[in-house]
Image (cartoon, helix red, strand yellow):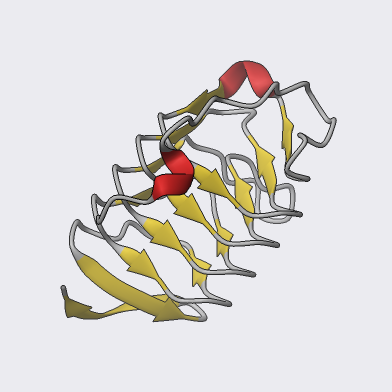
Length: 133
């Protein structure tokens, strides 16, 4: 990832349970949320960390995304992990128990319901690996 000057003085935002941050994204069950260094989360993103959500360093998440560690529709639950320098395109959904590998890219409007290995481009509904990067 090339150096982005907007992260030169990066500071983690204050995160309160169920309250939008100053960047207009929200976490429920904040006690299960781990935020890495120099992360970039787009406005109006929703994160439910009831069973744990880990965003490692330099993760980028587009606006209007949803990340769920629990699903009341199908009773699935599990920790979600977004590895270093992965990117998730706007309007995407990441379901419980999913790990997105280091430096992988998820295309916009994708539905991620299975693990994506490191260094892959994946997109679609459901998201499928398109190629190695």
